[in-house]
Amino acid sequence: MIIKIYQNYIVKNYINTLLKITFIFYCLIFIMNIFEEINFFKDTDSNVYMPLILTFLNAPSVLYEIFPFIFLISTQFFFIQLIDKEEILVFKNHGITNTQVLKVLVIISTLIALFINIVFYNISSNLKFLYLDLKNEYAKDNKYLAVITENGLWIKDEINNKINIINAEKIEKNLLINVEIIQFSKNFIFDQSIIAEKVNIKNFKWKINNAKISKNNFNNTVSEDLIFESNFNSEKINNLFSDMSSLSFFKLKDIKNNYKNLGYSTEEVDVHIQKIFSYPFYLVIMALFSAIIMMNIKHNRPKIFSLIFGIILSVVIYYINFFSGVLGQNLSLPPYISVWTPILIIFLSCAIGLVRINEK
Image (cartoon, rainbow, N blue to C red; front, side, top):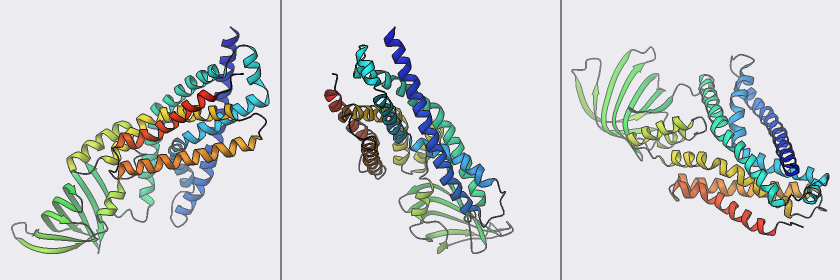
């Protein structure tokens, strides 16, 4: 009965600490983001409330990205409170060991992590999608855009007082395969169509060999080599599809199929999907890692020492995770290895720390 009471106490206080730290970080994100949006809209004729709306839409996805850090800091503050009130000693006097405290912590952090990954992620990704869509309407470069659908790559490009609608069946490195370009005047009056088997898009001046060009009269088609100016090159097209945080899990699966049909690399999508699967483990491991550190640090150490130590460790873990993800996206490592390796390293560190926990 007493153990149950203490378990409920641990759960209640841990959730309370986590909510407080999360709220603090959300406020910081909101403040920093709103200044960025105000700066973005300063030269536009937008509604005065637009920066506030966009900040509201974008903040949850930023919060999702830093949840591992929030879990680590929250766990540190939770144990600092227990140590200050000497509640750890009270637990031990009533037969509750450090290991039992960790078990409760792992269970509650697992449930919270699953909620974050299943519910919060899908909400934040949909809000991020609305954010990008809304912001694109006011962007200075909204005269050109690119999307990948089941029918291939579609590009809208405005250059030299022309509007170009471009469709390509596949992408192979610096080449677009089976390309059709429909060119209009500024007033959307048809100008010409260009059909080519391959288009070299390495530079902003595309090289098209044996292009079939049809003017107003489609019966009159000529073939020639030409240089076609565009706002896009292969690098820019690759960068356009790098923000996966605006895609829910089901949208990721759809876009992965579209990428495959297009011949576009799915490595970045695979890495992001693996990150979603691994995220609950990542959050729980960070909470456990922080708890083990706090239990192994001498209680007479200053609080600031524990916090600084935790922050330094979280930064190191972040960069290990970041560089591992980059290796996965660049094909240097398989996606599952690039994502799960940092988690495995932290888990092994936790296993070593568990052995050293003071159960006196």
